[in-house]
Length: 505
Image: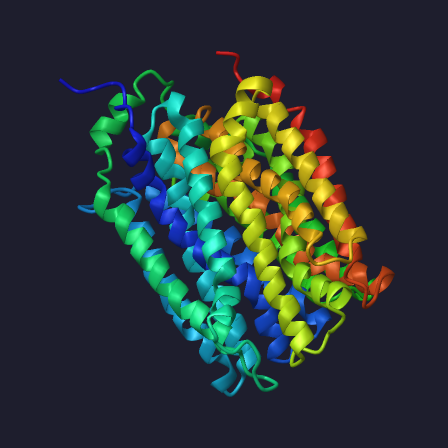
């Protein structure tokens, strides 16, 4: 007799399901805390950083919906999501291993940017199925606990990845190198992170057993079945004007780059908008021709037919991740320039400041790990998930304001506490809400599509923020922290609209 309820997971079940994310986040932390340092060391200017960082959001935008669609329809001897964990981990470890060799390559900056593309794409291959994996494996009443544990591992992995260079320096490893060369602290951190990432993901692959398609169907028997035919009919009824509008908007952005003398990276944004318009027209045409559902029609159709709760959370995510990407790009230049007083990448002061950024990132990720298990559950029971997330985002905004006004390295730790609490909530609350309100059979693709509202703001920051800063505050990256604070205040206000879209049951 088949079960219609997923088994309750104990502590070690929750641990094993999410432990792989510990390794994935080590990779992300090494990338976030060190790539600006790597690029500047290899000769990139402050104004070049947004363009070089554009690889990260672009690969996520492309990879996650595709992987979500495929993993929803995958079943192998290894399971449904686990093949993607393992593939992404192997490729990520490969990129982390090669990154420190960039200074020895004929075109070091190009090589480093290429490795960032490979690294971020590979991390996304692993990350997206992990989001859906929690929903696959846990009962609805354990979703909040599952994403809290996942957030704790994200925080712990980020602490590990961020603190590597700082610890290595204190163990006697050289933190200064000749101009154009990476310090040993950075090189050894990337290599150690590659091993840790791979081991953590393999742990989850080995210690978990995914439910079969038949079991998943039985668990979802109480849900209204997904009507793919209805989705295709809705897509066929969609006016072609929708695609034409996206193409026109993309063309307008391209024209404005020349008219307003914007940074050339903005061309990428216009190109992506036009490409989405073209893909929409193709998907509409296939639906009208009676073609069966496929990857393109599913991505376009499900994106336009998102559940109301997902649409409202999308706006929150947009502003939440705008601030985060501003932080990841600009914290190193802000701290080294305004707190340690140097922009010379070969100087001792600059490298001390860059290592202090690793400490600060360690603090906010450590706070996130603790808050996910100790603070968020208490706040959620007291205020509900929506108000909890709004409060946490407000605390994070205050943290960014701290970076704008403080000039003492130790005082910035207090600012990171607020940012860490907000980070914990960003990683847990929206996903717990979504996993309990999305159809099980489409959990992967919806989680992948939800990532669009993480990626698009990052693309905007990477392409537009540089132009804004050159126009308003050339050579003064401190003002980016004020933009970040404003973005999280807007996200906190937008979160208050989500409650009305959550089914009361």
